[in-house]
Image (tube, rainbow, N blue to C red; front, side, top):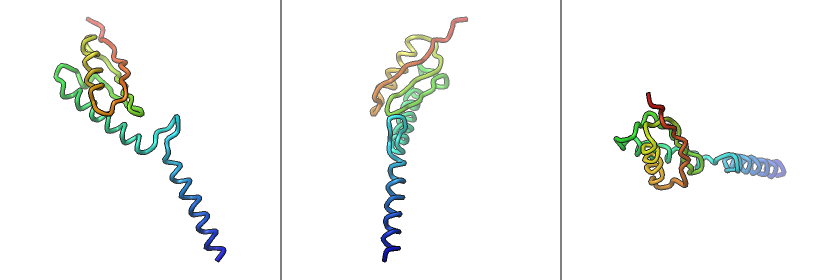
Length: 106
C-alpha cells in the first residue's frame, strides 16, 4: 500500500514539473506563445510578399509575444513605412518595431 502512495506522489511531482516546464516566464515563451508567434510571423511575411511594392526578400520578420520586428533593407522611407503598416494591420500583432534601413543610393 505504501509503495502505491509513494508512486502516486512521485508521479504527481513529475507531472507538475513537466507542466511548469512549459509555462511562460518573463524571459521565456510558453510552447503556445511560440506557436502563436510563429503563426504571426508567417502571416506578416505572407502579407509583405503579397504587396508588390515591397521587396519581400529584403525584409526579415521576427515575432516575440506578439511584437513584430522588421529588419533588413528597403529602397525608401515610404517602403519602410508601408512594411510597418502592412505588419501592423495583421490581426494579433501587438506592436511593430521597424528596424528597416534605407539602402544607400549609388
